[in-house]
Length: 55
Image (tube, rainbow, N blue to C red; front, side, top):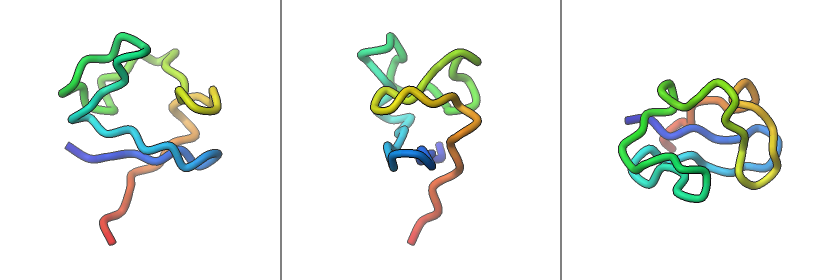
């Protein structure tokens, strides 16, 4: 599954880890996050994330 990066603060959502503090279980794809999910670091919405390109 693809990782996504927050364009506001560079937080990386890793589906292998999920977002336990927000109740998102490991293995949850970014596309499957609730529409109202927010960046745990800066609070922006899913729309402010983009796919993380492998370098």
